[in-house]
Length: 155
Image 1 (cartoon, rainbow, N blue to C red):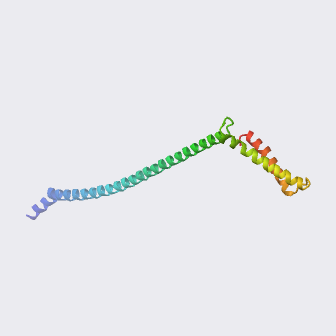
Image 2 (image 1 turned 180 degrees about the vertical axis):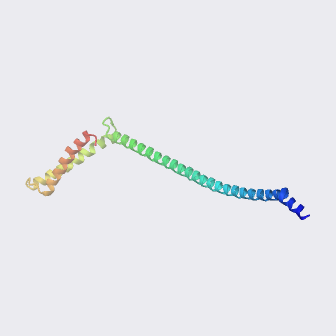
């Protein structure tokens, strides 16, 4: 009877038992491998999601900065255009209003008065020029000649 039992266990029953154990171990190993793979995939997906969010945040910031820079540039252009129109209007010789005539007359009148007072001071000093007088003449000549030369070159 023992030989029959050994023969039974040594044959198909042992193979069946070993097959079930081996299949269970393999399934357990595959399950552990699948869990590990899912964890790694989840980590990779989370990292990719974080990179996408950061990219979108950066693009939004850059878009907002682009809008701000464009707005500042537009404001700068508008201010420059307004300044140019104001200057052109201020020196427009076609303006025949009283205010326009006054604006045109102020600078030449002020310059004439200042030159007249300076000539009077030179006359009283016997037409001798001091250091201050020489500096004033240099400034006046520099203003008129350098200013016109630079204006012709567009500076």
